Amino acid sequence: MSYTTERHPQGITKDKTGFLREGMIAEIVAINDYSNFISLTNNREVKDIFYHIMDEEKIHYGMFLTALRKYDKEEDELKDEVQDHVNISNKDMGKYKDLWTAKDKNENLLISIREAIKGELEAILLYQHFLENTSDNYLIDIISRIIYDEKEHTEELTLALTLLDKSPYGLTDSE
Image (cartoon, rainbow, N blue to C red; front, top):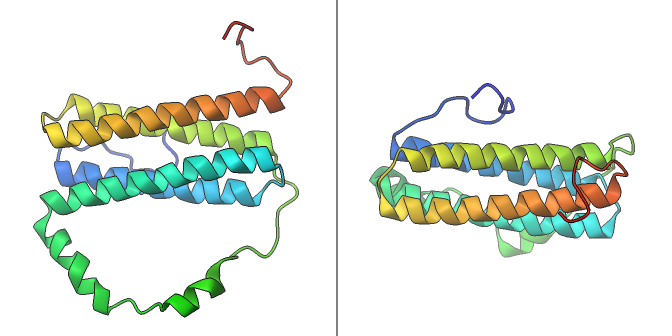
């Protein structure tokens, strides 16, 4: 799909594990974007929206990973194996709370919101395409739930955008 960002997968796969990995990539891109957007504003209301959506994107990542482990046994086995490879103690975790040292005051919040909407729409298209090409009920269930959340995110972001931007975006008052 040529309209996706350079960080999104560019192909569409019909393979279950390939799709699940594409979904994970899309969710990681979304998480990174929302993390960045949060760092760009001091507007508490907009930050709350971004945090809410980012938290759901993290859940989506976990849903895709859980499904991947179900279909890729090697991946499932590696889940346990890597426990010995990562040694971040609970006392060290507090050191990494604030990874940002400065904010870019030149960033336009409206651009960030529009980029977030674009990402949500791209994710919906990617996930809907896979739904059209799978008959696996387990995948249909989780992907349908994720699509619903992505649509909710689009609506939340659009509301924030239209409240902050004085342009009407072609919406009528009844919408």
